[in-house]
Length: 282
Image (cartoon, rainbow, N blue to C red; front, side, top):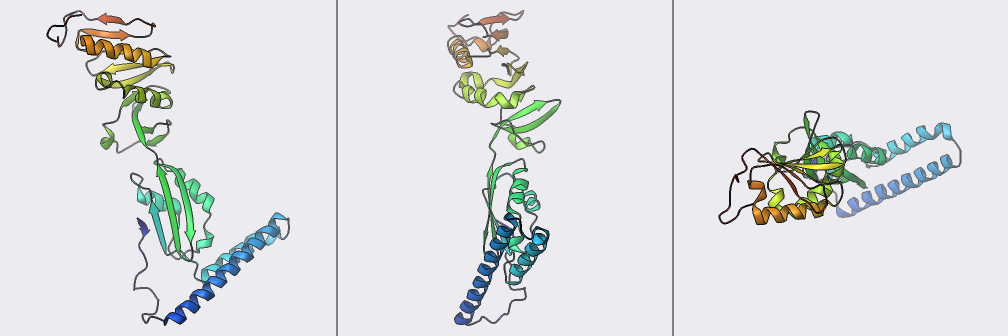
């Protein structure tokens, strides 16, 4: 997508097209001038590296940029690729480029850092195509979960990085994680749960306990207490009991999987199944 529209017929260019030979000559002159500017700039930076004329370097650099702009090296178009969720206006503000600005005057590294400070953007690349186009390519973060912490909900990626803190309605389909340290450890748990749909479909939230392990809060109020290690083994036991005995549909308050090779069930006052399957009892 273009962040700033291409300059049209309302600019100061002559309406009458130049002959092809004239246009080619003009391009040759501009190209040679740009090459000369680039060589002069490279030489100036080498002098600086050798410790010469340091006091005049800034002034010389500015002069080179002004000369390049007079030669036609000015920003006329910005083309962005890779954006899906990041706000285009926020990206344009981070670029901090105006049409007509000297294209060689851009601080590419500072621009990249500003772009990567935007929550949605994981990485960014910026390139110039002389004489007048700036290309921007961004790679966005992939949302993993909604994190509830200190009374607030934020959108996080699989590395635990916060993407955004508002306008989260469209991400309600994502898993909810709760507690200190939850984002940094959520990816492993969520990846595991995807292989146990009978369990994952019943989960309301995954709660990080003492920054060491997880509890799964189910939609029917049951707490499933997972161990610190060997979570996959524990989930396999739970999934097996659920498929064979519909355990999670019974009057169960909590299921404790922290003891290896055991499944400890705490039942409620009413021990009858909530949704008893025909021909099955536990």
